[in-house]
Length: 452
Image (cartoon, rainbow, N blue to C red; front, side):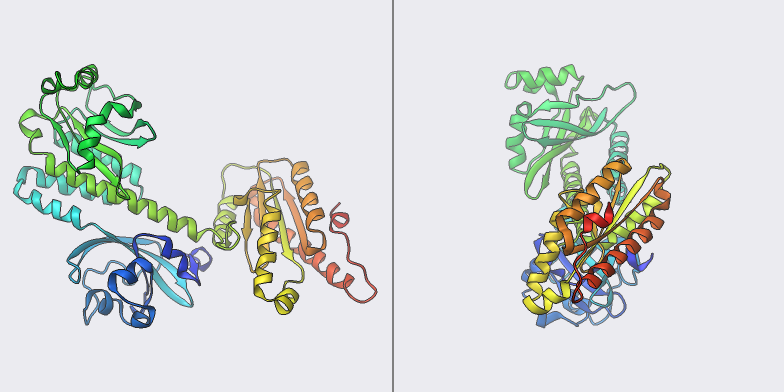
């Protein structure tokens, strides 16, 4: 993996917004470089207490590296594994991603507490017939970082091996239930795609108590819940079991089985609840990974895309199978050093933010990349050359002499790298004209005139 594609961090403070424990560790020396707010609170440590010490010494109270360390030696990509922490008597799911951090080749490690899930799993040891199913279901769930695909494969597996008609996950959004994932047996019709939330009013009361809802025979609810019985009979459901999915301590949905063998359903409570915990933890982990990925491709100060995103999108555009025209604009602030020297870096930062906001008036934020301290690149596709030129000229008129603008247009995105080089060169020529015009006796050139 090229260095430009590896996430690079100087200020790790952005990790303090996450509710999971985050650590940054040197991959060569095991030195603990950073712990986020949640981790520091859990370990009762300040930076001076841990920085530079070995991660296994601080986090596990060991004298040597941990034998089960899946992140040691990571050089690219992401590594994930489960481990036990003897300090807190907790089980953690660890996800490590290779990054560059303040001159270190490092791994950023996210720890998710899965102690409750692991404790529930231990209870399944006595249920030998279900142990294999549970183990394999969890293996499938964690075998891929593609969580939707892993969930579909997991539902197929448990549905088949527990001899159910359906295995499903419904998601709660507002006042509706959405059938997000479902496996159906042969000749079994799928459940409706959307259902009203009030249909499961009594289930929600049980879910709030962290309990499964198990109905071994739908006939037993006929008197108390006739509408529920009718809905189930319409779907040819004769017995069922469902367990809540908790995400950030809120009921996000449920996982369930329809029509497993009557003599088996009563033994499924612990297994399904445990599986629900693993699915919930996977959803939280996937959400955190998405947040980390988004942060790694976003410029924190301006809110536009960063250099990592620029390198990624430049490579994707150059290799794209679908050809389309593309316009590139290079924008560079004029006089930033003078402002930094005379007014301070806060004023300079405000200039950078203001320029990003101005560019965003004409182009979408996802098309704007901050590639350097005061450099921005726009990669715009899906519009005509005339519209692109109109936006660039109007942008140049607004920023006037505050920044230099260069641009280029290509009929194929496979030439995007050539467009970037040409736009950069054009911007450089504008900048030379600006500084020549600033000399005594000169006049600053009008940016719109030079573009038109």
